[in-house]
Image (tube, rainbow, N blue to C red; front, side, top):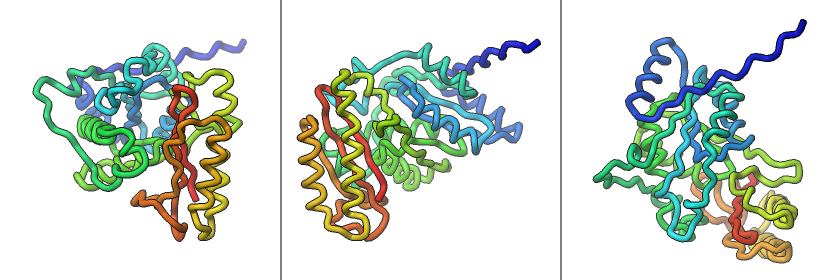
Length: 288
């Protein structure tokens, strides 16, 4: 007789820094490597792919869930950002994550908190001018999470490529002893990058959304091998506008390390875009 599968082991819930550090110390005392996957919850298969990448290199995986208020602007979607903790914990149990770090705002920003981490240069292009204070909020909260957990590795998705580069630079500049790893963007079969914000799209907008990735691929092909970027970007903006994206906040070809905009591609680069469908802001990028 075939026995039914065992139910997933519940994820260990940790809500304060002392408990997190004690658990990490216990794992380390047993010779086990630890990875951290920072998230804002509303988990989907893209997040789970980060957990799986972490598990490939470390015996223990901590997933943090914290909707960080300091990275949202005054007119952004902090209040309506999806919060589905029970569903998130069930997904983490199913994929075999070991612990969930669930700090509240008072834990991350106690009374009198007055320190901000800023990264110059990388934050002054692309999303930076459009979202004042966003990357300072990201760099500050991720720096705290890295220091609170002190994992061997931390995994971030390449879909937020500018964010990934900002975090890499902050960890390097501040000598934080954690390896920062990027994970490939996970996509729907039609090319749309997985995102918690995709649930905001109407049915019609969802049908249109894959055009963003298609345009990025078209631009990447046009500039690969040294082609001028300006004509390809002009064509791409027109295609996005014709598809119904408005506004197209940026479509750009940038150096993969410095994020400086490029007139021609002569080394590793990225085509990056941010564009709105209705009330939903989508970002995506592809490598050149």
